Image (cartoon, rainbow, N blue to C red; front, side, top):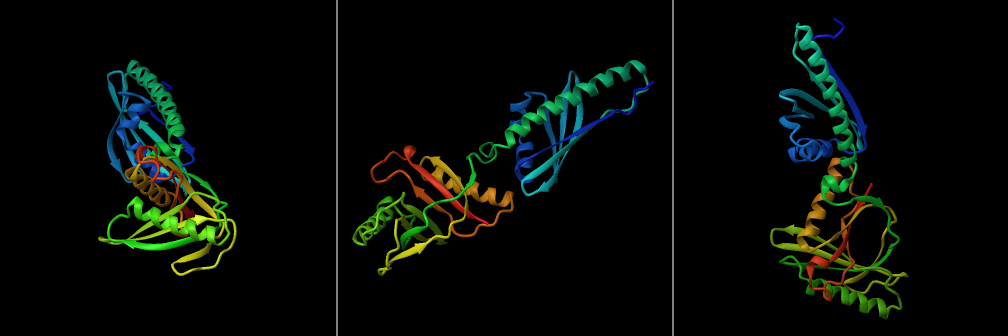
Length: 276
């Protein structure tokens, strides 16, 4: 007599990530299979809402999940399951036990989801962190290319910077830096730079740059052009998901000398995105 009908069970959980990233993770059936195989199936994908079918013994129980963005890096998930009205006392008891089981299973699964989603590599495929750089004095040069610039073209310009740095009595203090921007479908604008330990004069196409110390979103990847391009795409997605503002062009640290190491699977590249 004390068991209500219909029975409604619900709960919520709050964690650190973006609402867009959380939503993309929740609508992916493969992720639910990872946390609770053959227990949950995504039935509908709505705006900020996901509807699931929760399999409890031989019964499919509909569960509604609502995502609420609390801030740019915090989200709340509220879930609710409503059981149909029954009047038979025995059926009520069975339904009550199902409701308890549903609540426990949902809470346990969403705790697993929280652990999973708070790691950037699980959402973006790369580990992204916020950091800074000590390389503030740079010598740089720009060039254009009608195709994606080859390693030979990139490193020929880096070699010019190395020669000028030595002639100016400066020392190189870090790995070469590279930015490639698309001008149009057939043209690329490129800039390479070397971190150095002192101020030098400009000399024609070679110029000195003082980079303002600031904050950067950064990731390190190992692999060739496709891996590096993927890192840039995911970094852009991270900026959008967390409503971060890019303060300047992104760039790469070429940790591995690509002229000496021809195996692209061994290239180590750090991708930096200046962020406000």
